Length: 236
Image 1 (cartoon, one colour):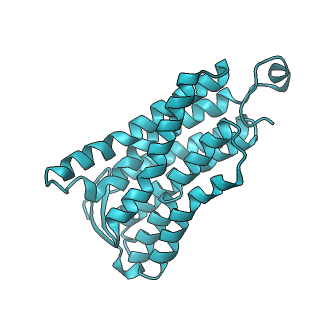
Image 2 (cartoon, helix red, strand yellow):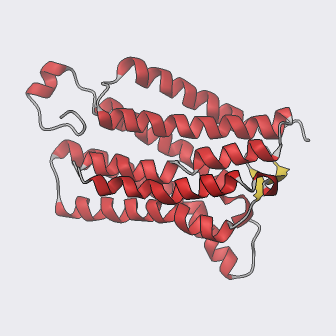
Image 3 (tube, one colour):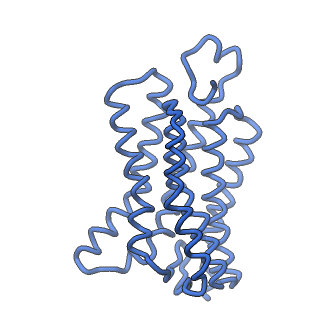
């Protein structure tokens, strides 16, 4: 493999690790912040696995499966994060995890069909079963989050929740850019980008990791400040 393969993944993983350390040390440990920290941990873990596959040479089908299993949890937990932001307490929200869980369990029995076909400095390309169906269930929660954030912002919320909503919306739109472009290209018969979309999307998701860090710190006022301020999500 080229000496630069996976280097971008390692650099991003290192920065996300630094973000995690700062968040664990300096932010409040409410449920909202814990979910945000978990999302960054998921992103960091995927980048580390991609580095191990592309640079270290651990590109077995099992490693590729683990990478997909990890990143499959990102969209549903992102939806749960936004639900927590708006204090949605329905137990039905947990159902958002069912598609990802089903794919993870199914892929466990067809691990040998996972293949890392190519690597570059900033992305990896995979072959895996049920790619189109997986993509449908993978991106549906991302789209749902964007729609939910837009609707709530239009209705108006308290100042702090509104700020967090706008930051999360910006992050979700940014991570959706490569997906939108990939689907447009696919409609024209160009399947090159869609083959590596999960990896490229996770690179764009580095911006989302920064957005999550911003809202965690914003949602971590000192106790005396919280008592005299508007409601901060996740503090109840």
